[in-house]
Length: 218
Length: 218
DNA sequence: CCGCGGATCAACCGATCGGTTGATTCGGCC
DNA sequence: GGCCGAATCAACCGATCGGTTGATCCGCGG
Image 1 (tube, protein in one colour):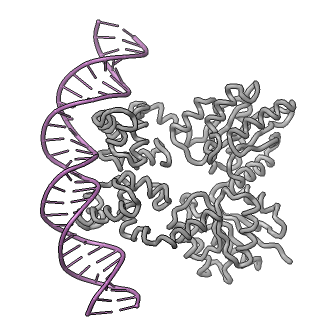
Image 2 (cartoon, chains in turn green, blue, red, purple; image 1 turned 90 degrees about the horizontal axis):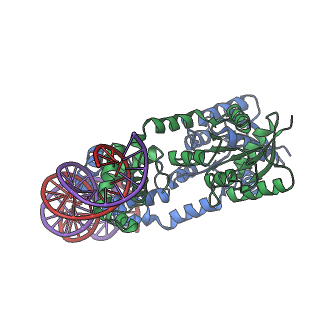
Image 3 (cartoon, protein in one colour; image 1 turned 90 degrees about the vertical axis):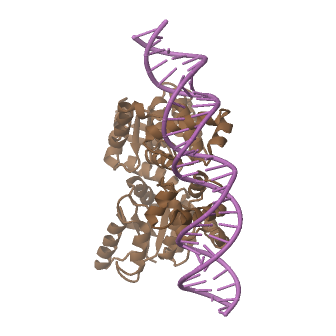
């Protein structure tokens, strides 16, 4: 029974060292390589495939500083850009918006864990993902279920776009200019956004959207 | 020449594992114990002191989930709550406001590193801090110098208070009510805040304040 | 075809905000 | 004492926002 061969992808050296050490304690798991962003992960997967040493699981963060992000890399991996059959991807991250989680799941991630998870939980997720099962951290599962249960409170893509621009500090006129629409349209979208978020002004909308992980750092 | 005895304090198991592994590679450094928050760190320092096995350096994060934060713990350590002479504290963290950095430095931290630092930088910081020198990551040093060079752009305590309430979603009247002042006073403070931040509306003020690490997550 | 959601737009009006001017008080420093 | 910054407050006015009402168009699904 050969070990599960794992590629670690995270931009923080401390985290890679921690994962390396943690996985070294798991029976049946071997860290065969590391990368500091999505682009480097793709290159490393291709290299190992060319050497006839394919990877069984990619353990990857979503946020990568200035490098290719984890969701993009996941999509590329699942599309076969780095070889076939594409290995499952397990996301291990700290803080992400619901949209990020959905994007990663839609891009084909087999699992999603948070970095505050204890080693045993990470071990279970690694084994499940490598075996082709879905592995979701309890908090992540709750968020996805909440999203599915309350789709009516989800913002439309356009509303989200408006909200993101709002959070950068643009007024209605600035947002209208940016999107080549009228200020009346912006106001209409904001009315809908406030209703969905249960607020009555722009700063409250931003605060709630950040709290609920609808938008991220501006 | 005995090893530098280090206590690791971080709420993330992955990060503790990474630091443990990283420090294991440093000659002359031994991780003697770990804690998951400031309170546990104080208890562990006391315990080791009572056993006659004092710690030479505390390597600690600032944010600790729901436990005692790193700045509070640093102050308590420097005050001798966990034994004397108090060991130096090296802060290793991801993201903090200028106020957090200043608070930690004022509380007596001997150094401040960011978690994206490569192992060699962390090693240098550990050795410096244990030797009683100050160890600041380049980015952190730049932020402190910038703060000292441009005190005129620093917000007053009251302005900061107003800005924080603004970012929670309160309007001028709400802020006035919260602070038992008039709306006119709130507006005056906002005028000053906008001028200092170089913006002309509230959402832009929030965005800039977050970007500059003046305020943190709401 | 109909209904629905999403996107777009307008007009109107009251509420709130932003900018300006002016003022006072207090504490700290020289 | 004088000066300065911080905090507080007011009045005024134009700008922007929030809420409401009303409308059209498009694509999709039943």
